[in-house]
Image (cartoon, helix red, strand yellow):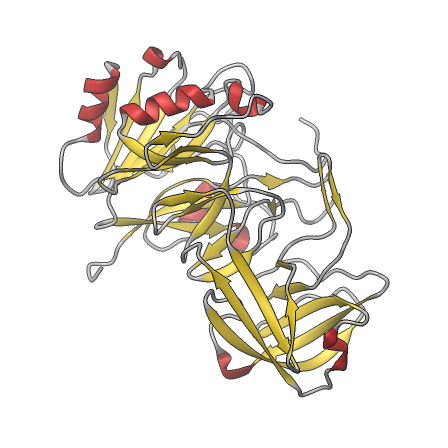
Length: 391
């Protein structure tokens, strides 16, 4: 496939469920799917198995994992621990995460042309550990991992109080200008960048970057539902990398920020109902028991692809599922995914990146068969982490 910048969708359905007690999901799959299910050894409290989907017209392997939050939890992993920091395999992100026992690929991302230094540009929003790290670049569905819910987008705002004047932030840690297929947006608005942003701030005629130090040593300037105090330490028109403990705001000339002098402080208030761990995907497959209609023009979901899915049952079990396949040739379509998820008693589910990105890493190896024959590096992953004994 060409290396021009565009979304990278993969089509593998990976269902990961971890169970502490109760009836075996593998038993449910046997009874409701009437298909062969082969259990695989896994860390204690996790159930990992393969499933035959021929009843649903799926001829490729379906890998399933289940778990409850009593023993395990889902975390968002970032390639190189940064926003727009490049790409890594889910395997390597899992290995770098203490307590990780399994991982699947995360949200869609954009690839740049060969030779461009920033190959992993996330598409949707990312909230990690209650910190808003990345705002959605386009209309994009989201999963609240802690709340076990999905939404059509992320509800968020970040507002600056500058000498009594309110200034709205347009985007947080977002690479601009964007250049996806049919999407070309010039640098505009008031943009906020924090240290997790791996690239340099934008530089363009008519813009200036205001460099602020975080007062009081708080955890982050974009912790959701909180206010941060920022002190102006410098200004520049150059593209610069954000230093640790600082916040950079790129704004057009004439912005209320131009009235500030060095040493002066402002306040930044970040709000969101997305929860403390939120990641994007497309589309929502099931929401509170109701299958969400797929738009006819969405050929990616109408045709079979390798898929990766996250979902939850009515009893709160988390499921991760992958389906092997080749783009447009084999794998699962959206209706087939919904049918399998319903058989597994899933009431809420979101499709993640798929196709070549589809990866199911557990038991120290990649269990599925990625479309390209090897595990593909991606920008984000969902990792399954064992809770500490105190949790």
